[in-house]
Length: 459
Image 1 (cartoon, rainbow, N blue to C red):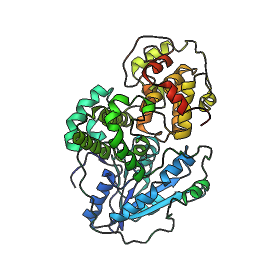
Image 2 (image 1 turned 90 degrees about the vertical axis):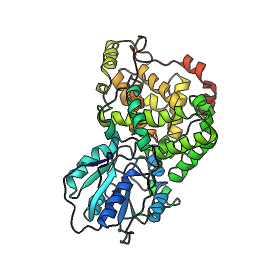
Image 3 (image 1 turned 180 degrees about the vertical axis):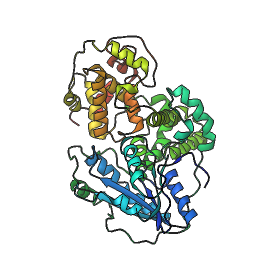
Image 4 (image 1 turned 180 degrees about the horizontal axis):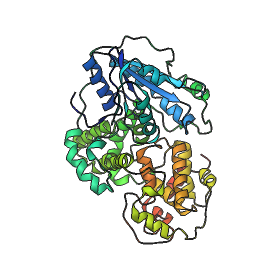
């Protein structure tokens, strides 16, 4: 097989002689279409004259398991099962609802596999679990970069700003910004369905969530329904109505000109490659300029994945550039007034109604408009005792509530509020030379009153 820059082998296990299938674990990219990891698994299966088994799971055991994320993931399962059958692959879904339920299903399935293929996702659970699983599983364990258009490995080291990454991305795009070849399995799945498989239907989801040992205080979002069909529906709406307005109005929440695809990109219900190709085709057809959207989707998003793969862990201030650490340290003793504890932030109970509206949007919809999320983060920095406390609060709120949280892109956006991927600005208290954002500035640049009406306390 020709070496693929997306693929890494994490162990040195020898393929077994009497394997029954190749196992693809849809861990971070929960889709069948436009999925380089699944495509690689298909190639392995065809090369070995074996069928493919697609495995998807949902566990109660991770730190931020709650009704919101469980519902969103489960809403994508029926379509994944149908599409796996369409390509003649097997499909098994395991719902670990209680901590007392078995936690070894991956290993059970791996025992009969020629190899395990999964997602090379450089954040949250996959980044921790993949090395651990690879050391325990006794068959080859491959991780595949199915999140980025240009493979992370091609960049090769941490890039310190978009200007450094952009020319590298642009040089590689002609090779990678192309439709994937059709997936075709040579041997269909005819195996028995394991006893632990759960058939998921829309009607069963509320009861499945209610029966899970998870946080039931974070409710599902009415504004977002999970799954590939919903992702493609939103993509079509963006192409038909908002691409033409995006460059002019993407920073104005009341215009609703953004794609709102970030939750679907995070959970892998849609591919950034698929979105980019559709945007490019639509822009060419209607003679539009889509550069600003593609800059965000490709350069900025892949800068975040580059940071997650090659940079420091995002939970500490040491992840920030030296100049940021120095200027924040210089202003560490600056008086802060007011100072809010995490609980006040969580309840949207600050003195600033715009900030509260941002937090209410997060609590209700699991997302904050991108431009207003910058303001939201900057104010947490301003109203926290220390920059580290601010970072902890931002990560906590995003990880707990955001449908696009626990993701390289959102971790990088949070750190941007503290100076990552930015330049020094004029020095001021608390922030030093880190960029500042003010309420007056937001009022000048956006329709704050419209946003307040949409996110009022009574909603």
